[in-house]
Length: 248
Image 1: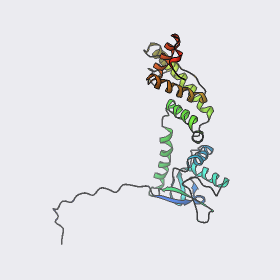
Image 2: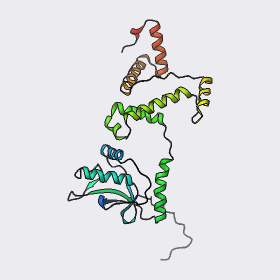
Image 3: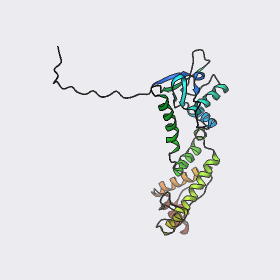
């Protein structure tokens, strides 16, 4: 029966685009010979050993990796060191002699588009901004509670200590009212003329967690939810000789 040309049809939603994930034999994969980005292979290896392999390589024709060359180098080194124990999410072949690596097939791209994608993949990360104060807070928490996780981030304790010092120095100069991105002399003027001032306390990372926990307990006892008021109340107790008011 012919279809009435005037009959209205309900448009069907487009199927969502999904990654074309396939498992490639590790030693069949090839480096992109024009790769210009040299990543930190040892740190990537540490991440894979700590968290497993949670990404995918972007593989074009002839098994050439256009995005993920540092990851490929890290996997090859890990295979050489311990071929029988791949990172989580990397499979062993049935004979146990090779690793199977989950990868995204990007053969739908032309060569120029694949090269442009590889550049964009590096460029979008490089152009990002890191809020070092927030990063330092996260790393301090990891350092105190999960040393294995902290090690897997690729940051050393020395780098964290430097990050903390720089963040504290910036806070001392700029103050809480200081807009991000102003020159040091502008930050200093903003701080001196602002209504809020800061007292910065320096602790080793090992002591930081202890102090934070104590402030939390004291705040709970006093019914105070911010450190500024907790310190003020403790000073008042000290001046009044009421040290017994707070249980350690």
